[in-house]
Amino acid sequence: MLVETVKLATIVMRLTPELYPFLKKRELESEIVLRNGLEALETGDAMEIIQYSISEHQKAAFLH
Image 1 (cartoon, rainbow, N blue to C red):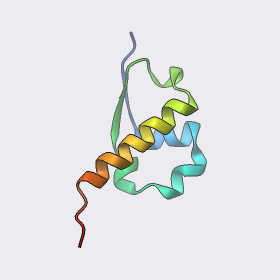
Image 2 (cartoon, rainbow, N blue to C red):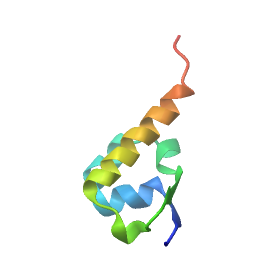
Image 3 (cartoon, rainbow, N blue to C red):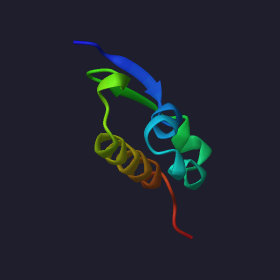
């Protein structure tokens, strides 16, 4: 089993580049561990990873 760690920006630019401008720098710099490597990733998988990353970064946000 190939395990690969990549930045979210790499996933976005490869599979969903149209979403790149909508993500924050902090989100794009998130490190993602891929169990089967980047080559096995599909667009649907990328969307799930992006949604999860956004959700995780919003947990740290404070409402004023």
